[in-house]
Image 1 (cartoon, rainbow, N blue to C red):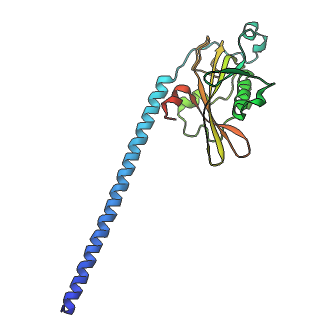
Image 2: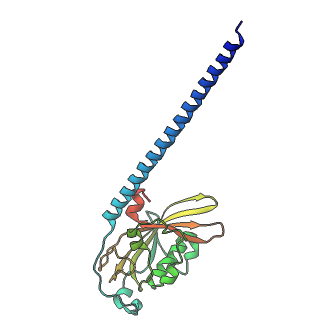
Amino acid sequence: MMDREEIILRKEKKKKILLIAVLVVFGMFLILGAATLVLSAVHNGNLDRRRTEEEERTMRSYVYPPADYGFDIFDDETYMGLDRNVWVSDGAVRTVISESNKNSYSPELQFMYDVIDLIINGDYTGYNKIFTDDCFDGASDEMRRLFEKDRFTMQQLFEIELEHLHSHEEGGSLYADIKVTYRIRNNNGTFRNDLDFEDGARPVVYSLVNDRDGEIKTGKIMTYSMYLSGLY
């Protein structure tokens, strides 16, 4: 039978072992937490680097003629003779969406039809209202230069096409990605400064948010190549 002193020593030994075990577990959690932070920082750093490389690869800049904010593009007979329809494509079939039939299309396509109208008419006030309040939060200078506009002239858009790429529901809101392709005749750079003066085309993706009240806004905007990269 153990005496009192031996019992006390054994209890003290158990306490030390338990304390060491607790410290070891705590230390492991600290190491794991630190490793997670380091890996997260490395991952985010790699994403930022890849985004920068993507933007440098896709961003372009041209020298444009002086912008004439008073010019009415609907007085230009050559422009009026171009294909100014807004086509909707599902990848196989194309149809024309217009003011008279747009109600037969999804709300997201109707929204983008109206956005095209704002661009053509140079309605920068209305255009700047299509974005969510946080759309450009955290955006790079290049992204802001390309997509965030204070003012632009009427734009001679033609060969216009909308394509619904993807949609999903989350938190009671419907999210939809719409690919928008067009050419700009006599581009002056006030709206798209990554297209040449003639009639280049670089598709853009508007990521739309349709909330519970049915209000649609643009939550993200990027070039199609950025969209395909999966970095945005």
